[in-house]
Amino acid sequence: MATLIPFLTLIILFEIVLVIKGEPLVPALFAFGDSIIDVGNNNYLQTLVKANFFPYGRDFVNHSPTGRFSNGKVAADYASEVFRFNSYQPTYLNLVKERNNLLIGANFASAATGYHPSTPIKYNVLSLGQQLEYYKEYQKELVKTIGQSKALSVIYGSIYFVVAGNSDFVLNYYVDPFLQTIYTPYQFSDILLQYYFNFIQDLYALGARKIGVSTLPPIGCMPIVITFYGFPYNTCVEKINDVAIDFNKKLNLTSTKLLKKFPDLKLIILDIYQPLYKLSTKPSDYGFLESRKACCGTGLVEVTFACNSISIGTCANASEYVFWDSFHPTQATHKYLIDHLTPDLISFIQT
Image (cartoon, rainbow, N blue to C red; front, side, top):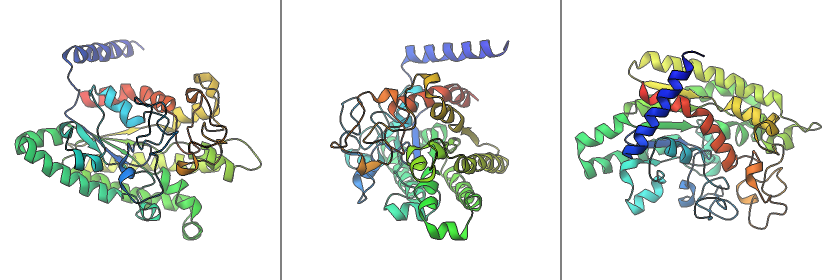
């Protein structure tokens, strides 16, 4: 405890100085992955997996849907605030059209994608490989805008977030009898982690040196998973949570291999499993009232298009709920998770 207080004091003082200066902590922020951090790329795709309609976004800044799979902000927005950006990183597919905010980074995430190549194919969304291709295009535009020297400074000095794996299990493995026939969930994890290794390796080759990677959440606590796999109980499906725990352990081991291979890589694993498990199992301890049911509709099965403006029973106050729809967290949960991770994020960029 004696060393903790000075460290926290240092963080607070450091943040105060940055607020006074009005300077972001890093040159830019880039996000890759799935719906947990997608801020609207799927709006521009021919896919059913969209959130560009009410009541999604009802508690966002402008009280309108943006494509975020939440009632308001998502983790990518709160992370942007932590790093002191004055505006949120735009979706890349919108950036292509608008050409504004190029210098603060971009969000390439696409809901329903995953590490496994079959996951985005099922839902016609952006694969992680396609997200990297778009990042290459972004780099070219950045060089055109500010020149190669400054562009390289941005590329090497920025923060990169990767959030994936949820859809690989909930929207792919556990709904695909063929995959379940040829792989156990633990074998499927091994395959996903090889794709993860390759993705980080490719991202490193493109200049990323500070990468934050999210663990899997307790997927067995998602309302939709409890509804379909929890009968006759009404609690988290622990056998599915065990798969997430196993994946997260392997994620750490795989990340250690990456760090050994690339000595100048700074890679941090962001644990969202533990805080979200606590919220899901004891919501009242953390200021929430409901975790079994989501806010939208019946709160049991609605996800994306099933959560809409005519959904019966949608809650009045989403801040009391851990989940917005049966798959995605509320804005309040996103904030709780980023608040939990902020000390790690701050110390990460200072090393």
